[in-house]
Image (cartoon, rainbow, N blue to C red; front, side):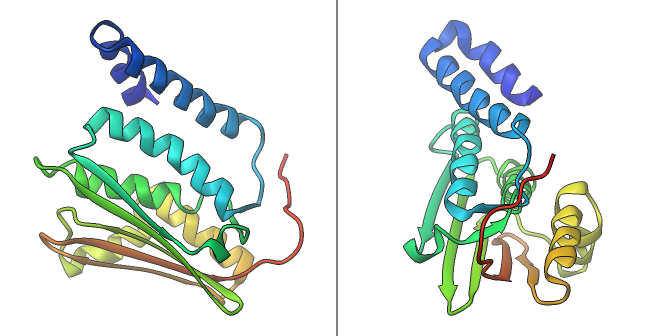
Length: 188
């Protein structure tokens, strides 16, 4: 939020149109967050939320420094997933993998459906990390540990959350969960 507001502040004089776009995107994000959280949302809705966030980050970094690719199977868009499981993973890719690289990088978001399961992947070509650093990802920070805890509560042991990383080549996060049938649950 503060990085976005600082970016908007600096763009107001130099590029008012971009500043306006950022304000609109930020308002969409805040509206979504303030309306109450759904336990489950469609992948389509989660991607729309992520798009607003990524649009802001692309403006902050520049389209030449942050490239976003999506490989989304249309059969996954209506699948219900726990809300906000993509955002922390993508935010980590930007903050820890892409931002440290002078030349920037790419984040690829994939979703595929295999019978009664959905597989979601976030891959970046950022700085990567050493193998001994990977266990820290699962326990440090609020975002990833929150995702794992929520997956445990909802799916018990019937989920996959894994992180692979290679120094200088990037990080690959894989989430696989059963497809939820039925209607969405609202919290609050």
